[in-house]
Length: 220
Image (cartoon, rainbow, N blue to C red; front, side, top):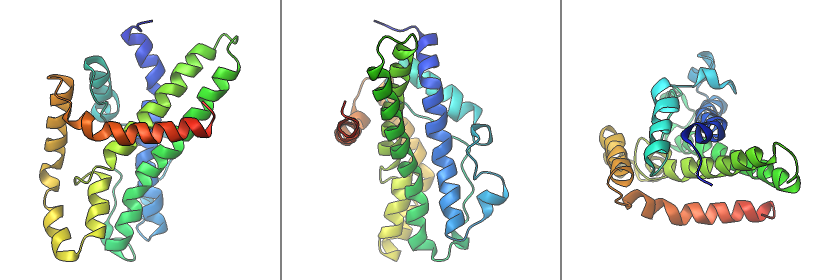
């Protein structure tokens, strides 16, 4: 059954908001553990989505990508992290960057449990909506996790790569950051508007691997 846009929005609203905002909160929380209190002092180490929502990145852009198809994309207000305040900046950068994708993996597991519960009560009046929302939550969080792990600054995977690379190479690689979002947006536009599956070809194999593992864990 084909869903209307309003139904799609209702199903994806909570998964998208929490996938993006808790991803950012996780960065701030881990940065605090490693010595940087910047996000904590600004109230960004919070599970309250309102503190993280960006009207364009958290609301408008996910709606547009849902409407036109292709890879869903969005962002929250970036959590401020001063890497210079970390106890060992280059090493600890890895853990701060990895916290966001790790939060998405945990949320994907939680939404898979929601989906499992819905399948166990097929006669309940809310089961169809709950199942659709759980399925959307798994999908959205795995997409955001895999997308953010691309080794492209300023994505989390790019910062992880900077942390792992030797100092001289890391410095040169980090200079890509000013162009990183433009490169990513270009790939998303090619995917959504021109049906050139460049980004999809990269993301689909790890997406399917993670999705299969999560669904197997909850016996789905």
